[in-house]
Image (tube, rainbow, N blue to C red; front, side, top):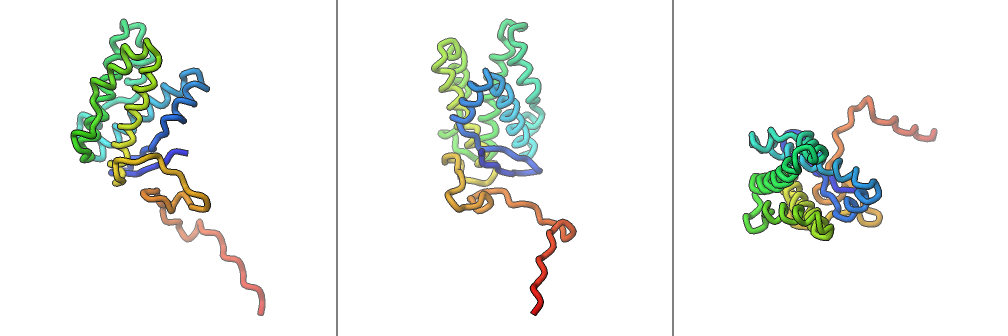
Length: 186
């Protein structure tokens, strides 16, 4: 299960595992890849909204996915622009969250791993790893966590709420709390 982080004005994101994403994309014959692309673009949009960045906050995850899906009708220009702009959005989110320049994504490298990398298959996996790594860095930083690190999972016996940076549940209203068990008569 992916670690969730909260930031800003109600924004939420997941720290995603590369291997889970690859596995789900393979199992679903590529359909999960489109869902993943929507989710990560939506998370970047939330970072833009929380940091009051008009450019990032106005991006449209649905249009990004549409560009990928309908790419054949545009001589593959739209999906290539969408992929390049995705790298630019990651870099902008990293800049907004204070990640040092030397640790930020290079959108050109991300783009070149996708195209012509996708034609060779293997570089496509490197593209996915590269953008997932940098997306996770931006989401960690946005959530107030150290931006470097791996996906964390609860240790044996550890509750998810005890993990560093974990979301704490909202205070439960008195009316929703379960009744306390009655004490046995003395």
